[in-house]
Image 1 (cartoon, rainbow, N blue to C red):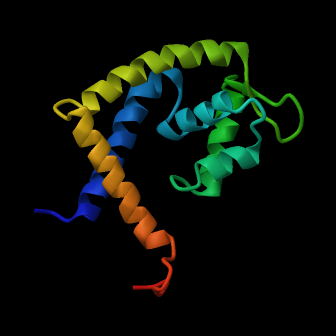
Image 2 (cartoon, rainbow, N blue to C red; image 1 turned 180 degrees about the vertical axis):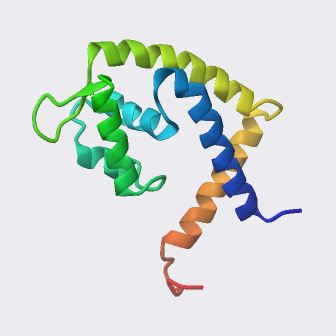
Length: 142
């Protein structure tokens, strides 16, 4: 059996490659999709909001590039400096793309029960917290 790190990396690579291909018709990448969803979910979104929300998955340079891409693509506008908002066209196109993403999510979870999915996410979350949150009475490093 391969270790968990191997499967985490392979899963992330597969998710990215598959989503990039799925969203290519919309001139989006997986990261662009994530940026758009941060902006959609936060009516007061700023560049800092996006950078903070997605920092675990991409560096600042990649995120800044994705923000620039969705601005250039007409998905997002700047109602005032440093602020981001979906355009009417962006909102409509995002809803279209969401239909494909939903089908993608169903495909990626095929053969996985809801309980198995919840267990997998819970275990990964716990492992992350074990490695990033200092515990009372224990050293910060193993």
